Every structure is written in structure tokens, then in C-alpha cells.
Length: 247
Length: 90
Image (cartoon, rainbow over all chains, first blue to last red; front, side):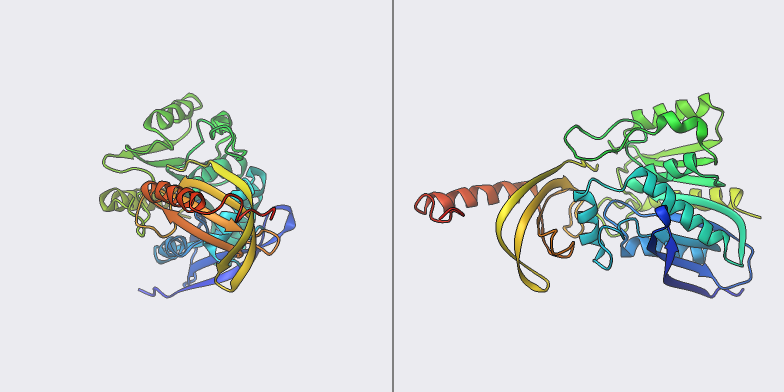
């Protein structure tokens, strides 16, 4: 089977018509392929997130990860850019939606695309994946331990995140949620509350909460990595996208 | 967990980053996931000069014990010097 792929940095048009950097990984076959927008975690547009993006390409998806911190720190290293974004109060919700819309449009415009686009995000990106799926027409969404979909950041944090649970009725895509039982951001109580809202509005969803796992259990370069939860989680992700992003 | 709480102060001094010395004007302190330290959470301290750009940054990721020891060491060092010796108003 032909399995060549290409990964490269590209420029896409994000929110407000801004040109931002993004990391694109795609199989080189003729397709048609489903597409995935990868939303990076709060520590930034880093190597492990690029590895995740390549993993989707290897699995047969056109995948792109927009650099959400590009505007605060063009050309800076991902950790410096993340610190600058954090000091500025985080990524504004409206800008996130515009950047994901731009990334999705870029993927749909590739000649090997089948037109279906999913979104996946980790940590703060999990919240942003939910936000994108409530704001844009998408075909599948995966929220990996996103905090503040339910609940608000502590007072005085300087961050402007608002809870998103009120947007649940606008969710445009089937939602897969992957969480750690030992996580407090989001806590099992908060994911249960989100589940209730999804049920209330008749949304298609699946939630899996892994025991012995906390926040960031997919992060292979961090002590929070939990191989069993991550391996099972990856399988769930590929099943989900296989189900909803096929032509 | 991501605490999201960032303490920000203005500072007056210098720091040495990857490209050499620069004036530091701001500092951020927050407890969150580190980029590099082999712990799930650390006390993260950034010394910054946003006027130069986001790369003008000296970053530390310390365990809680180390951060508290650092506070003690700073206080002890200041206590052993004549009051005001290192003041910015001198």
C-alpha cells in the first residue's frame, strides 16, 4: 500500500483575514481523505502536537494544526509564544473560531479532500474543539480533557474564558469526550454535567473516563502520560473519525 | 490541572537569555504544567521584556519546595546586606 506522506509549515488565513502559521501533514495518495484540525494545548504549538498531526496523516487524514499563538509571537519558540499568549490572557474565543474556520477551509480546498472535517483538541484545546464544533459546521469533534466547557476560571486569573455549556444546543457534530478520572480540570462532575446537557439536546456523543489517568494523559513527553488510557483513547479517536469523516 | 492563575509584577533589573543580557521589566509567576521539568506541576517564573518581544524571556520551572527555598534565600541574602543597598532608588 502506498503510504507516503508530506509534513510542512504552511500559511493559512485565520480570523480577521490574518495570515498565520500552521503545520500541515497529509498522505500523498489521491484520496479522497477526511480532514482533521488539531488544536494544540496551552503549552503551545510544540513538537509533540506536530507529532500528533503527523499521526493523523499516517492514519489517512489531511491534518493541520494552526499556531494559535502566532500573532503574539511570530517566529518565537513555542514555549516563549505560549508564555506571551498566557500573559495576554489566552487565546480569545472569537479568534479561535476564525482560525479553526480558516484551517478547515484550507483542508477542504485540498484536491484530495473528501469535504468532511473533524476537530480534535487537547487541554485548553479540548475546550476550543467544543467551541469550534458549536460555532462552525463540522462533521466530528473530539474533546480531550478540555477544562471550562463547564465552570469558569478562578477570579483574578486574568483569563476571559466563559463556560460553553450554554452553547450545547448549537453543537454541529458528533462529540467524543476523553477524560481522566483523576483530573480536576475538568472534574468527573463537570463532564457528567456536560453529558446531561448533550442528552437534553439529543446530541450524538460518547464519553470515556479512564481510571488511573489525570489531565494530559496523551502527552507522551510529560509525567502525566498514561499509556493504557492513551492507547485506548487513540483507538477511540480513530474509530470516531473513521465513522464520521469517511466519504 | 491548569490553574490559569498568573501573578504579574513589574520588575527592574536584567536577565540573561539565549541571545545575551537584556533589561527585564515584567515577571509572571504561575503554578501549572511545566514545559521541561519532570513533574506534573511546577511553579513557573518568567522574567520578561515584552517591549523587546516574546523571546526576551528567562524562564524557570521549580518545584514548590524549591520555590519556597528561593524565597527564603532571597530574604536571607537581603537581610545580610545593609538595607537599601540593592534598592532601585539609590
